[in-house]
Amino acid sequence: MSAAFAHGLFASDSLPFPVSVGGQAAKDETPFAKIENPVAADAELSVQSKDGMIIVNVNAVNAKNEPVPGSTPAVILLQGKTKTNLDKTMDGKKLAAGNYVMSVVSEGKTASILVTIK
Image 1 (cartoon, rainbow, N blue to C red):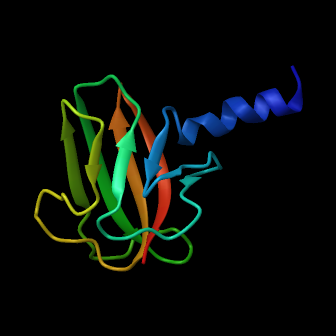
Image 2: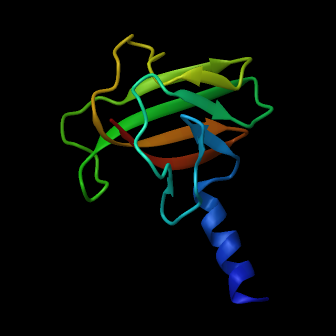
Image 3: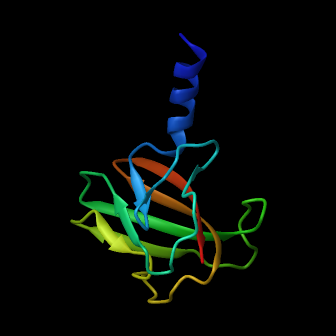
């Protein structure tokens, strides 16, 4: 087994299915996949999944990618669809500018993606 192949298997743990935000595909990295450039608070979220229910938890993080103490995760549900916008949170609140980790749950797997809201 080549080193590149082994790395590919390991890295895919952070991105088990394709996800894009604001037209940018998440890049598979460890321990989190990443959206390279900052996106708008209402950017389109697209998840390539055949699952009828996709759950997205969006957690504010600090510069070390650790959860911000006292922050409440935003929740976005995609029922019977694969696209929505980041401002379609369950509580109706827009995400403030800052860094976040999105946990996208679908097909019994979780994609963990770093994203910056501008």
